[in-house]
Image (cartoon, rainbow, N blue to C red; front, side):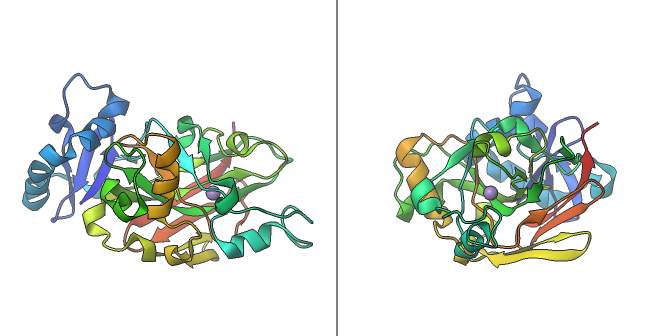
Length: 284
Ligand code: MN
């Protein structure tokens, strides 16, 4: 199932007839608008058969007539993997690297960091670059949405804790500031347009994906090249922190990262999960 947030923070799903069917009434009426996806995910086992019936029936709003927003606007935590592809490690360090002469350590050493959840933006928004004199980069990633409370989960069981997947961009300021600071500006975590539920992604450890800027390909890889695969990331993070329903993990980016400037359009395509197109603008 492809689940979205649309218009006035309503929950929707892409139906078999191509329309967006409304699922907002499946969560309690007094749920805060930006908490609806957390509520849906927390109660998904009880709700999914009703949702599936509506997707089969269809008759919702035309996809083009609604405004698709970030499909998970308010996770409690947004975890992210640093340098999690070997070829990205190579391009970041060394004589010709982004951080010249440095030894760049991978997720095997650095493990993970947190991004501010307020950095999330959807396909209805734009990537807003705050400063003209600094370099900001695109990072193409797979976003993993946690489905149920996960504490000390083994890699073997980890994928059972996944609700779904979404295209995710980890926009990054290059420089000396801490990772959490450099990657937490408002609008620096575009996601969407849909969360594809895990049952429709049988092998998340083997997903092709690529990123273009203004139509020119910059990144292309497959999740099979991840140093810490998705299951291993859940194992590593859940050993330390309790992962909660609706939490997001940004799984890391492959080689090909590069600068974006106002006026660019960034498109991330993951054939089995979706395509996210984001304009880049200067912060006004
Ligand atoms: Mn990243």
